[in-house]
Amino acid sequence: MGRRSALLWALVLCQVASSHGFQALSFGTSFFNAPVLSHPISPKLHTTFRPHPQDATAGARSSALKTSTCMKLSTNIQRRHVLITAAVSAWQLLQKPQAPHSILVAQPCQAAAPQGAVSAARLLSVIPEMPFGQPATNGTITPALAQEIEAQAEALEQQGGRDTVKSPLLSGSWRLLYTNAREIRNLASGLPLGFVLGKVYQPVDTTNGFFENQGEIEHVLGLAKASNCVIGDVRIAKLGTLNAAGTVNTAGNRIDVDFRRITFALDELLGRPASLRKVIVTKKDPQALQPANDITYLEQGMRVTRGGDGSLFIFRREESGRPMLTQAQREALYSEGGGEEVSLFGDAQKDGEQG
Image (cartoon, rainbow, N blue to C red; front, side, top):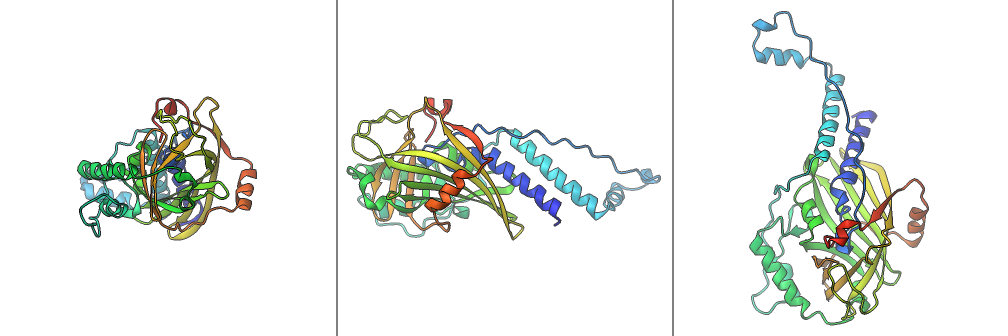
C-alpha cells in the first residue's frame, strides 16, 4: 500500500478513535470518573463519482458483462475509489448513533470455584473470558450472569473493611474484567469499521500518586491496532467528602482523581509498526464535583471499585504489556504543545451519569 493510502487509513482510524468510541473510554476512563470529551467531529467528506462510460453495445449485453467492463478500470483508480468509499463510510458512521450490537460471544468460565460462601476466587470464576480480552459488561453477557456477578461483588463489598486506599496492595497493574458502567458497556457492544475493544488495564502507583487507564483497540481482521491512555494523578480523599452519587466517604476508601492528558495512538497498520499519536489536554469544570472512586474491596489478586455514580468495576491483578510513564516521560508529555483542550464533567456528571 502506498504512503497516501496508508495515511488515509491512519487518519480514518484516528478519527474513529477520537470522535466515536473514545469519547467514552474517552475512551476507557470511566472507571476513574471518566472525563467527557467535547470533541467536534470533523466536517463531512464530499466526493463525486462519475459513471463509467457506457459501451455502445451495452444494451445487448448482460448485466454481468457490464460489470466485467466496469472492472477494467485501472488498479490505481480502483484503489482510490475503495479508499475514498471507506473514508466516506467512516464519516457517515460517525455521524449516526451506533446502536449496540452483540457480535462477540463470551467463552464459558474455565474453572468454577466450589459453591458456598462468596469469595474473590468464586467471583472471578464466574466472570467469562470475552473475545479479544475485553471486559465483560451487563450489555455483552446474559442478564442472569450479570446479576450473579454483581450480587457476589456486593457480598464481597460487605467484607471490604476500612482504609483500603492506604493499603500497599492498591499499587500495581490491574486488568478490568467486568463493569456495568455505561461508557464501557457501549464500547464493548461494538465500534465502527470492524474495530473492537480489547484488554483494559489500570496501573496505579500510590507512592508517586500516578495512575493510567490503558485501553487496547483491535480490528477483527487484524488490519490495525490502536491504543488509548488516560494519564492522571491520585491521592487519598478526605473523610466526609461527597461523590456524584451522593455517597459520603465514611470508611476511608475513597481516592480523588485528577486527569492530566489523554492520548490516542495508532500502533500497527497492516502488520507494520505505526507511530501516529494525538494528545488531548484535559481541563476540569470548576463547578463539577471532584472526580473520585471508592475502593470497596481489595486483596492481593482482586479489587472492586465503585465509580462516582455507583458503577461497578471488578479488576484482577495482571501486568499490562505497556509500562507506566516515568516522571520524566510525564513531564515531557505535559510540555508538548499543540494538544487539543477539552473540558471535563459537564452536564453529564450533574445528571449523575458518569462512573
